[in-house]
Image 1 (spheres, helix red, strand yellow):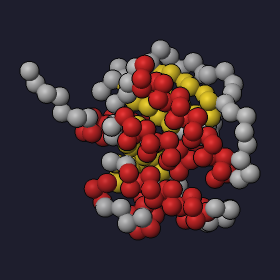
Image 2 (tube, helix red, strand yellow; image 1 turned 135 degrees about the horizontal axis):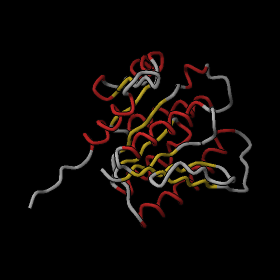
Image 3 (cartoon, one colour; image 1 turned 120 degrees about the vertical axis):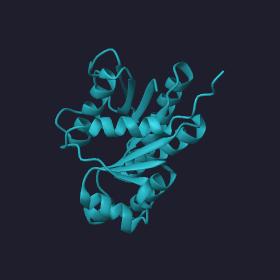
Image 4 (spheres, helix red, strand yellow; image 1 turned 45 degrees about the vertical axis):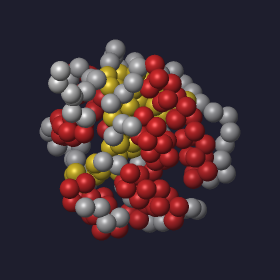
Length: 200
C-alpha cells in the first residue's frame, strides 16, 4: 500500500466530511502512505505535509441544481484523478457520499483499483427534501453496489444502508470517527483489498 485517492465535494476547516478526511489522511501519512485528496474549489491548496497532496479543481459552469452541478464537478474530479494515476498511480479509490459517485465508479473501473465508499448519511435519512432526491438515492445505491466495502459513520446510516439498500452485512463496516482507532480500522480495510503480490 503506497497511495490512496480520496474524492470529496469539499475540503474546508470545520466541515464534518473534511475533518474526517483530514484525520484519516494524517494517520495514513504517519503510516507512510501518501494521500491524494481531489475536491472542488479554486483557493490555495492547504499544506498538510509532504505525504498529503491537495488537488482542487475549479470550473466555471454552474448547474441549476445540486444534482446537475455534481455531475459537472465529477467530470473535473475524474480528469484530475486520471492525471494523478498516469503520473504516480494509486492503490485505492475512496469516495465520500453520492456527490463523488460518478467519478469514483468510473475511476475504479478504469484503473482496476478497488473502491471504498464512506456514506456520511443517506438521502432517505435527509428526508428526500430537494429536487432530484430520487436520483440522488439511486446514485447512493449505485456507489454502494460498486464498492468493495462501504463505511457508515453512525448507526443510523448503517441501518439505512442495510435495510434501504439491502447491503449484505459483510460489505458494511460501522466506522465511528469519534472512537479511538477508527483510522487504523480503515487502513486494515485498505490492506485487505490489495491484490496479493506474486512471489518470485
